Length: 88
Image (tube, rainbow, N blue to C red; front, side, top):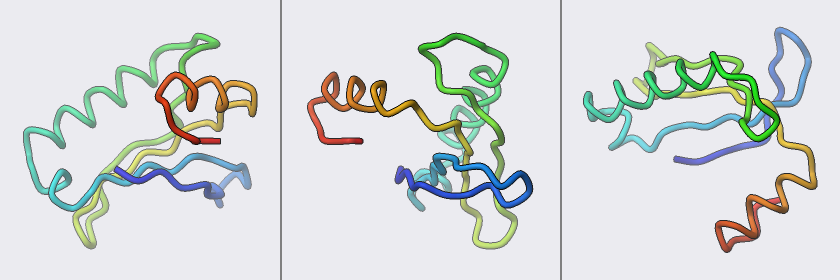
């Protein structure tokens, strides 16, 4: 999957937009799991869990996407360090 900084136009707020790779979005088993996990995460509220704003499958192009709240800069650094990459 790829994650992009985006703007949710309906509310004018910055979000993280996660788009599944084509091969994953076309795999029905993976897509079902992705949607289930996003819906489950959307019901959770905790400072260490990124809030899910929206999840779905686009009818044109057949790709799956999810909108997430942005992590505060200090948490982005912690996630990047924990994963061993420079995600921030």
